[in-house]
Amino acid sequence: MRKWLATLPLVLALSPAPAVLARAVEAAPGTTTTWMTVMLAGQRIGHLRLDRSLGGNVVTTTQDLKIELNRNGSVVPMEVLTRSVETLDGQPLGFYSRSTLSNADSIVDGQRQADGSYAVTSTVAGLATHTSLVWPTGALLSDGQRKAMASAIDRTGQYTLSLFDPSTRAVASVEVEVLGNEWITLPDGPEWLNHQREVLQTSRDVQRMDLWINARGETRKGELQMLGHQLDMLACSETCALAPVQEIDMLRAAMVDSPSPVTASMRRGGLRYLIHSGDENIQPLIATDEQRITPLGHGDWLVEVGDALPGGQPPPSAEDALPNAWLQSDAPEVRVLAVRAAGRDGSDLQKMARLRDFVSSYIIERGKDVGYASAVEVVRTRKGDCKESAVLLAALARAEGIPARVVSGMVYANRYGGSSQVFVPHAWVQAWVDGRWQSYDAALGHFDSSHIALDSGDGNPWHFTNLANLFGQMHIAQISPAPELAHSVPRGAAVATRDW
Image 1 (cartoon, helix red, strand yellow):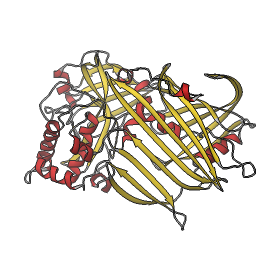
Image 2 (cartoon, helix red, strand yellow):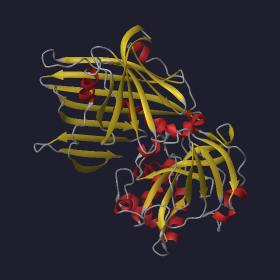
Image 3 (cartoon, one colour):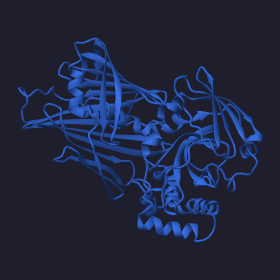
Image 4 (cartoon, one colour):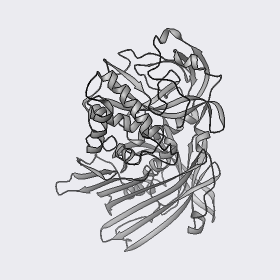
């Protein structure tokens, strides 16, 4: 699904919470609240409320983000709330995250146990899973992050932070550069602030966030790039933060223009793409059994999409066939539906074709206002777009014992959302069939060579959301037929691109 949605909550989890500098000698009971307005490309899209509460030797930091994005005329509301509980010297006691990306909440609740481990309960669509977590050495929660950045105000140069994200239970090693003090204009007037820049480098992307903090360790401004636009978080009054949002079409911002039409006959054969990513150190695409990629240097990539051939990517692991919080293949309602859709006879190839066709007809309301729903929620509502189609198909496949993954990428559309000849963000499924990973697209009814894969994973929405900057950076320079890459027709009847 899309880092254009999760970049903001994810980055907020990697930044210090605006809060009063806490030292034991100055701690006092009570709650301090900071409001921030959230702007994208100069348009207000939501707000962030940050509360820091002190009680005894415990500090609780709560960040509540609410934004609204427009997708081709449909408003998609999002809310992400995170809470961290720590001692005044920065020792973690517990963490909590609630993401409202659809009609059902996704909740993560971690509580420290007597032995120092953390009991973690993950709940999606009302279904809970329980795991145990050993706290990563040196990882910081919100108040620990804030203290570390506040203590660096008077230094110069770089330092490193290990930041824990409650939503994903992942630790990010972030390089921080102290750039010095500056006058910054905020909605309520100018402030003298310390400028620090966070840089998080992954194998897929480089995320940069500029922060301006005051002498008490409060973050007063945050700035980053998302989909080629500047996103700003600015401290201001409650009235300012809660002002009405303004419309901005994120779908158009996420599209990648095609240099030429891609005809139906071209899509039925193999295709060869020349793609420029903007950063030669970042690989924006993945190799699959259907997609071969060749680096050309200077941020250019040759991408060839055709028939599935073994060896393009590793075979499935045990996790690729197991249920998880988003692909609840062990839920009774999913298992019943899988048996009904796949039938009791036939090969995995035949079953996957039946499952794909079943999902195509099962989702009867193509809602663009669904942020991201789990398989159980899709079963209950029969509503969604390409993401929900992919999540349900992957869960049904796993319920039938067929390893499956959700692929995030883009697909060609002649016309979509008022634009023509564009590649739009899209999701589909890879299934391990006949000794190789083969793709199935339930939203469109077929898979063809106009699908370009950027990532694949276990159905967790963060796989889709982590691609936001990639869409903003990619440029397709050339597309040409490559008939030698495809020797069979697409799996399923071709239909017009319906939605994203």
